[in-house]
Image (tube, rainbow, N blue to C red; front, side, top):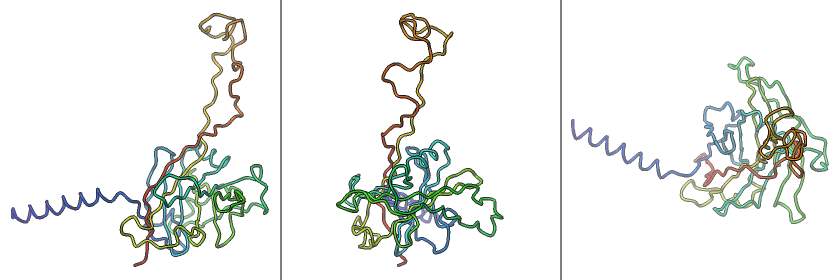
Length: 270
């Protein structure tokens, strides 16, 4: 009995050690016709840095980057400025190849009218509980690093090309997906075997930092600021006015919040 117990203990300990060495991210095999957000094979991981959950899947033709965003301020930032998906295959966090989605007409002159988001019907057992209540205009996609002439702006709904979709359901969550055709990513065309680092790559998820509302000090009639004065600034200036040169409420931050998923391996049917 003791020998059996010792054998099981050693086997379990070795399994833990092996699991600890598996530091790479293993994409799961995309199920045709199945929404990854409802698929039983998809596993969403949460990133505190970008305040969203992510899942990556693939089939023989595409890589699917699915993001689940619950925080309202992050959702607003995504709708206003988009998310950039950076792709790197040199083992470094390089930002040479990027896909930003959505891109609005106010940002770029699009060649086509924006399409609407894909309305994926709920599964039979959901009884419509998660049916989308808001459809957001897709806008377009901006491709960086794919052309020597500079960034390209393309439709987000062209079959066989880079695609994107956004929907907000009754649970108030945002469901964001970008589809990357493997044929248009020459660096990833060599299918990895699932062993070693050969064929692995990195994906960066980035969006402009959420701006912090400016503070203009106490309102008129409130406590005095150090140094005296009539309302908030020395010299009797009224409270509530921003100091000269400060950022107004309409300004947005250009600092990027970015999270990298490292050492990604694509799944294969073998």
